[in-house]
Length: 538
Image (tube, rainbow, N blue to C red; front, side, top):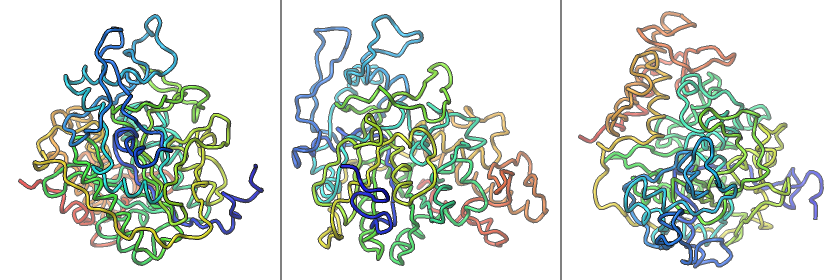
């Protein structure tokens, strides 16, 4: 039955109970890998049964098949998750240009083991295993107490950055991999942050490292200075004081240090650290006076090369903005990525809720990252969609299925069990996404003008070196901005090779950066404080 005009999920639009939406995007794990075995707890979940498998070779009908297991643990190697790796995983054949004869047109999800073995012998056993519920006790409790969505897909069959861009803007602006030119300029598309501001609603970003949301050019505007908050200093405080914005984004630690382990779940980071982080965020939200008006959404940006049995949608997906991806793929953005974990938490959700596919707005709509701006638009009655993609994506306000807020939601969550026996490897080579974060820092502080940018800068760079570089880059950026203030030069910051790319409200280069207070004597030290703990333990 159609809902009455002006209503959401049975509530009149004016009294819809959710006033604060909190979003956390973790890294590089598939649904089956993290939550597939939760089916044992709730048979309604489209998870795994143990009957799933993948062949070592899709071209050999007699090839050994790798069964799907429940022995996932600490993962050292990073499985393939580039555009071409994902193509092989979902279609079962390598990507070629032009396509090879008899190339499948329908995803069969048969190429995960084969592609993993090409990446590293033995890796197929890693990608073909998921976590037992007790191994991820925080998620086990959240699945039991709130909602799991078992049909949420990455927006783009590509890596981290393009998918993270979709989360808040409904497009990657043509990106299917790292784009250093756009890193310098910032991605220009409009975001849900601006839509919230235009309608008189608040937003805030709580970060532990350089916020990945600074990939968006518009968020480098001076008027958004006060929207960036250091997680350690402000998140719990704002929760306790009831001051979380209407749209709240929490960013995690993307680098893995001995003193501050990575907690984003990206291999080779310990998933237990990610569990601790989710537990910490949840417990802060649960203790907040805003709890009874919250919806907390946890998703993963992409599957990270780990197996999932659900076929990726490949028909009727709209290109967000008419942009075709660059060579050699020339992707039309007409397929979604692999299914990823999604948890929804609110006192307005019944225990054990399972959200399957959406009921619209189109017959073939799916839950994917663009569902976040689409749902936020609906909840807060925003004026316009951002792209054709969020106009098409399913919305999840229907997960609110209680008549009144529950009073029995757990106050605390279980303590996770450490999976890694050793300390963080600070001398490990940085991942592709970490390279992009370093390159973004270089672009903002002006180092993109050097001959070493972009590739030589990150060539053979280790985690410890990357953290040190990011720290110094932001410190230099602050100093350039302070010099610029002192010189009253509104066109360029002083100092050689200085050309930072924060923009003012008219799109010009500004005097300050997110997190700084204009005309403050302490402005130079802001990022020094921000990164004071991000130094290598050796």
